[in-house]
Length: 131
Image (cartoon, rainbow, N blue to C red; front, side, top):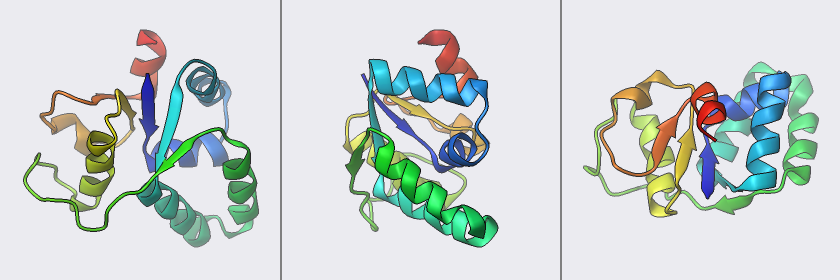
């Protein structure tokens, strides 16, 4: 199974680790294939530089050690495949669709209203319960 995670999950996982996030990353990396979108990685680095300047080195180290496939997120995805409130989230979900991801994990409520068949959009708790 191919699993992609959103920026907010990466921030929580890498900068504020706890047992639930540790369990999430352990399950994904030992049982499934983790995919990260280039858009999400860029956003993670931007957020870290802006809000957590002293953690940039930690992010670089963790991204080097984390087993994942990096997938390219086009800057201009085709419009109209789905509706989402925050247009900045469109390329993230488009990447998951284009890469045939099975599950997309996010804590962003804007994804709750998206009407698509695939990928399955889950919170961390829902993913841990189901998988």
